[in-house]
Length: 355
Image (cartoon, rainbow, N blue to C red; front, side, top):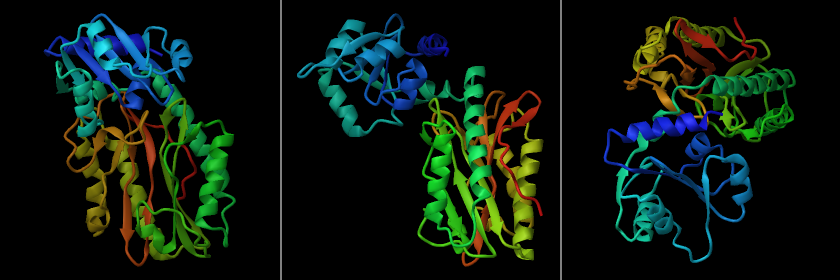
């Protein structure tokens, strides 16, 4: 992976500020800039030094995974922050304000003897992750293929009498059997009336004949996430289901096909939302059309009604319109796409119903 390039890009951004050192505590950002996969570490990056701070549980792993970093091993009673920032010559620290609590920031200030100036540098730290490299795209495509295959396998086994929880468990087993390290989020299985709740948690409710099931699922592979939603029908779908399903599907396909580089997330969202609104279901589409996916299942870029950010080549995001009607149920269809110079490239290939 291109960790040196990422670090150098971050260093270049410092030249336009008075920040001389960056402190990274978020685990996904730590992995992005160093390759470290453990659960406890901090990074300090200055113009000339890169230090990873961890304890004895992870020093060997840090040596193996982060060859370009100097290892600072935490010891009991050690003022690791003061020692490491003194070593690096830090004066002004840029930190991830969007990932750090006020309490943690206060503790860090105290550990450093209140001699450092701390400034929020969240955007610069996280924006580097928005555009995916070729190696990242390859990993994400593999992750997507895992969730695609898992859905195709499990969906064929769903029948009357199985519970929502049992479907979720079958999906998790299949995802792990296909090589994923974990789920990217807790699987959503919403059947019948539960479909009106976009983020319903699976229950012991049994699947009935002639009802819809919305399945929202994802895998994590080599740290990267996938996100997929399908709505299927057990039995023979009625006219109302087919009508609403086709509205959702059409709004998704047109948004995927017509979105172009440099459109804002807001503009792409509007493509799909206008189609749903013209069919008088605008009030039943309450969430954003999509979101970025990478090391986190929800990350930038935003693709919603207030997303002013531009969607550029190399960005991966979801397109997931939905219609939810209390007392009836809901339908959502979600795929991941890669924006290219020629528009979106569809990355998800799980089976999708058409009526």
